Amino acid sequence: MAEPQGHSSSALPNEYKVILIGAVGVGKTSLLMRYVHNEFQETPNKFVSEEKKTITINGKEIVLYLWDTAGQDRYRTLTRRYYENTDAVMVVYSSVEEESFREIQDYWFQELQHYLKYDDESVPILLVANKSDLISPDVDTVHFGTAKELALQKGLLHPIECSAKTGHNVKQAFHVIATALFKKSQPSRKPNVSSVTRRQCSCMNRSSDQKSERLHVDNN
Ligand SMILES: Nc1nc2c(ncn2[C@@H]2O[C@H](COP(=O)(O)OP(=O)(O)OP(=O)(O)O)[C@@H](O)[C@H]2O)c(=O)[nH]1
Ligand SMILES: [Mg+2]
Image (tube, rainbow, N blue to C red; front, side):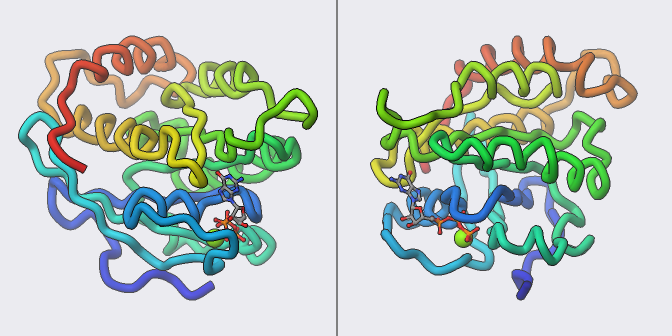
């Protein structure tokens, strides 16, 4: 794939590289377009390269460099460069396409493990269940509880259900990631957890997620 040019690493302390991964057509590009430009298209471009978004959390400016991929690139394998210097990951699936949820475990987690040493909990990972507007009793859906269980088991951030089409929870999803990055940047008196696995950290992540709700996002 053509890779985003420009920002290739989190060069400054308040700059973070966030990648979006997930199966074909789950809405990665749409989520980015909704978040950055407040737009939605029925036929978006396959991918946008890189988007920049600056937000302020508790008075601290956080710059997110958001890297999109085309889901079909899984068949060509994303390069190491794409994953290099990643600070956080948004793993997207569609609430109404079970295969896209299965693909997370069968493929994307393996990629992350390979390239990011994803047992290192210092890279926040958020599962995003997109297309919540299509959930209805008439269609097979991925039960959100299954995503919550998976996140707990793997020590990921608490997942979020959203819709790029309606805008439901889209801002919140990116803010969950920005908040996790903000907290990571704060000096901590807690014991060094770098040697603790994601699984062992999942309880810590949960309680810190709850605390994060008290952090103030000043703008977006
Ligand atoms: N109903 C609904 N449709 C959506 C939503 N998000 C995306 N879509 C539609 O789903 C299709 C695929 O969206 P994309 O944003 O291109 O998905 P993608 O994950 O970037 O796809 P690839 O780049 O091919 O991997 C498009 O027709 C979008 O309009 C959503 O939240 N609800
Ligand atoms: Mg795309």
